[in-house]
Length: 432
Image 1 (cartoon, one colour):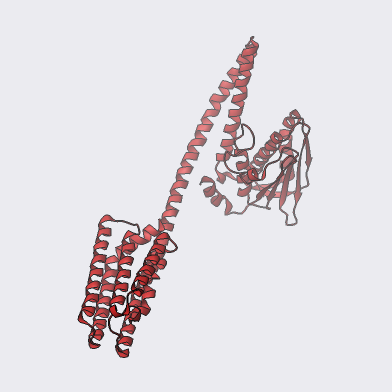
Image 2 (cartoon, one colour):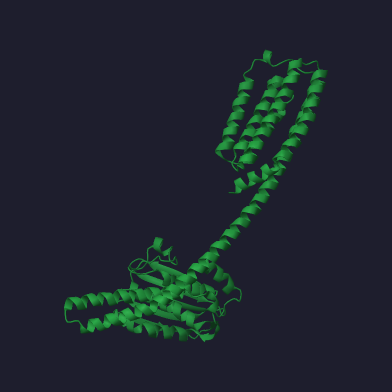
């Protein structure tokens, strides 16, 4: 995309560039022809380079007009222009003495242009190989066919004129390529930012619609669940009762998914920080899941130290409930879950949730926090995303350490107060 934009910008000023190069070339060709004539050089060796120069300029103008009509943004016009320039330079060098030509020293300068324009690419390598092949072919021509040697005075003059000519063209070319490259980078950056903004806006709309749909589905699901429970109580057939139990189980699973999605899609701007006792939030969350842990045959240990922070207690509790639920699901019966809080030296708070469950593999650990990635059958992965989002909104960090077969430790670090600029920035990131 960047190269196409740069090529388009160069083509917009292509006629001006070719006109400038042609004007400089006409002056330089006239001077070279004059000094060759002064040295009594063969007439055809003076006229042919002039004809070759006119042919090269005509072909480049034709290609430029073709590219403008087609509005092409690829490299083909520039490849052709480089190739015609190479053929012209090698041809003129051959006619004016080959390896003994006064133009010979500047021939190598023109061969560096492809790598400067196309970079390290197959095109630049192909053009470089072409230059080498043309040079080898010129070097293979016997000395008798290369024309007479020039006197030192004319030789030096033609060499200086040729060097100034090529140096002026190369410097002008490099400057224009550089300017077009800078402008192309700015254009591409602006387009990228615009596309990101459009994508973020679209994701916000989709997220809003998804949240509304999820919210509207909760009431019908609750009704269906209630009817299924009534039917299960009155069912006399064990097989029918069993099937209704499956229906209730699936409805409960759907409710869990909808609840997680609604929590995940809740706007980040609703953070309401206030002075809270972090240890109290942790004890409340542990009390909520205590029955569930007991039902799974797990020991739940709570070890809290007094920690006071400025935070949103409701959102932190919501995040902690998701972390505890994951720990319960990952730990087999007979295991243990430990929740503790402590205060760092700078006053920030730390929450640690440790379980003795199955652990997480290193490759899976790296993907935690990705929407809908989960290591649990029937899970959604949104709980981890929610917890990470809430912690990040508070300006904190969350770290997972796990050993397969031995358990997982989740460490949450929270500053004494969330930064004022975090919520808007994170809202944009969350939406994107």
